[in-house]
Length: 571
Image (spheres, rainbow, N blue to C red):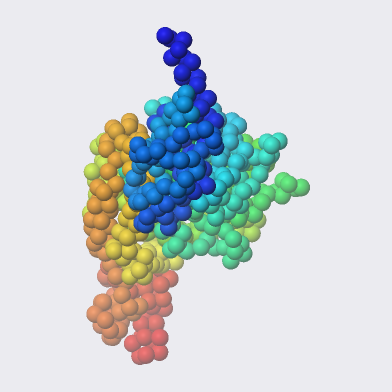
């Protein structure tokens, strides 16, 4: 009897391998363990009656859908295919039968095959786009990526994929309309109960962030990353919803390459990977070692130490040391020589807007375009999962309630940002206020923010991907055995942003009209007298940002003269 069971299993396995089902000529991807068969069709097929031919490459196969026999390659009216509407499909050849739950997705499907660990190893990646009758097979090397999300107990891993040719050499491909490159991230969004926060947060950052100081020289540079939602299978196992996206690297930022002939280092890229002192610039930093890839919680990302050894930590060391140890007057006078202040202003704003608790030093990139020309350091955010009401872990922590509460203010806990706000160099704090209220009328409007975050959740629900993600990962230890509930996340977001903006409206007082120091809507002699008193130190400048009429970070005789001119209609 045991032998007969084994023979039957072998026959079933052979049949499963050799029977390929297509829907309307489009391939399907199977998870045999779960009996899931997924087909990627164009998004316009959702929301209307869907009709397509169902075919099996085995001419002797018999097909049924929901118990009704269907001749091979004949047309079937599926009707509604949205929201994970599944259809029971059986395929038999007289000796074995396979039963599938057939579902449809408007998202691309990615299939990874290989043996994955924390080190790179050979793998393949098949990318099947909706409506395409064949997938694109890519050779690659891949590994798990991330910190806490790749701990031994993690199940839904992030992946780092590097595309290669048949000889193992780097090979670029443009994927899903994104850049032409070999370096790709598959982001699982493990800690995000909505699975969309990093994708949407990066979209928001790219939309409003001021370009770094050198971008006029490099028109194709991007400060941030693009990504697209996909559904992932790993070695035939359905892994659910992912974001396939770009990486922050030299090419994305268009940093100037190091000179291979002379060994001269030009562009530099670093990533903050922990919470040590240099990351938050709180104490005078220790000496660095140019022979090391890491220093005080900062990791070198470009150029690779193997290519340039030794590297040059000097620019970052000097900037961090300046931010930490300079006196107030020196800081005001020279900080703009070390850091890209307009970008840091917008970085501060996105952290405050989204309450990005895990991005106040860690999970950010620092970079220099060409240290031979300009040693200013600019910045870019990374891993925006722990934002908009989401904590950095789904397991409870003592400060979780306050950390995700939109009505509780969030200190930056970073020496550089604290000093920028306190000492207002080049009008940094004033510019924060003006920038916030400029964006408040558009990108930062509560209704706009809610719509931006809710729309992709609703799309994933309509696509059925949200339900498949729930079926696959709800209750898993990666999310502290919690239940995935996308409707609940929509409700959370719908109330979180209005409450957050209400707090920020108070935290960032409207700067008013330049010269309208008292904020009554007109510039008159009362404003002039108040500005003079602020200049003389009789009234705190912090409470009257409009007194800094020329927005240079100081209230002085230049502001008095400008206020007079505005008052007289000459300004």
